[in-house]
Length: 211
Image (cartoon, rainbow, N blue to C red):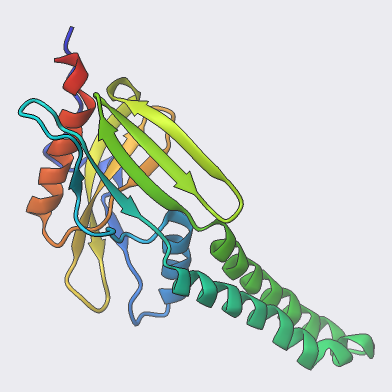
């Protein structure tokens, strides 16, 4: 029995197709942290075909957090934690009316620094491998490495997400939403047509075995 992968042509209101990548806006830090936690949308080379045949849809691609960005996030986190503590630590130790004020500053700096450090440590690298009608999704950070097999029956829907940039033209990505609620996002593509093509290719690859 053939199942059809739900690939809606129109945007669904609950699909949240819009996203924003950081540029020169005040929200740049938040955007970079989002990218760090989910993996930067960069392809290592081109999408690679694996043992291509006339009836196969086997290919793979990667998205990762570049090492320089990981180092930058770690350094920024340490800076946010260490510098305010060194500069205002003495003021905290000398109790007075100013203590709560400087305490709030230090706590806030530690919170921001902790977010940067977390992004540097748990920022994911992902490898998507489509073969034999299933997706092998490998994910790794500095602390752990996991791999799972996703089949067409595990997918609730796929969507095209338009990504708004502050400093360049908008790009597009494919969002794979599983029935359990988890979302995985492909690298960004320059045009909607390219993202639509990848969306169709993912659909064919996941349901290749069920034809």
